[in-house]
Image 1 (tube, one colour):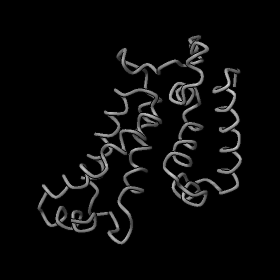
Image 2 (cartoon, one colour):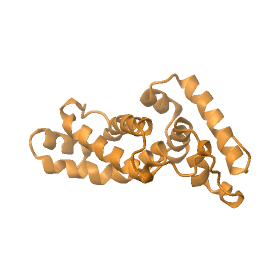
Image 3 (cartoon, helix red, strand yellow):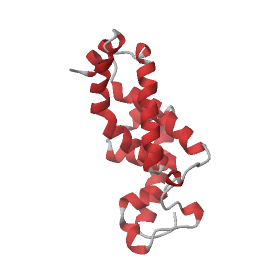
Length: 171
């Protein structure tokens, strides 16, 4: 089954067809959410909420377009809400957040995950979408709703920060 068929079936009342979309995109969404929120607990919550939002709004989805970019916008909005709320549980705390005084030890600074966790969420998002997921500048500009030149500039600066972190320097 393809995504458009799954959406059509869901809208027609066959709610179990949504499982196809969840199975296909859940791991990808969790990875993106983890990179946006900085921790697994909030990522899981945001991913679940984004899928619920998608399910509730399937009638608005244009089946001639790709499903994941639409879901990603919902996911991104949920992650932003998660980041801005006050942490109510220990697992919501960012891992190795440089603003709270914790910094990775020297050997860990060569670890990409550790370095990514220390970037600002918007920098981490750009690095992940461009270099790990292969999005083009135009896709980033369109889906993040910022000009292409701004994407290029922010990505340049995010790469520099990541490079400094990976080499053990302060960003």
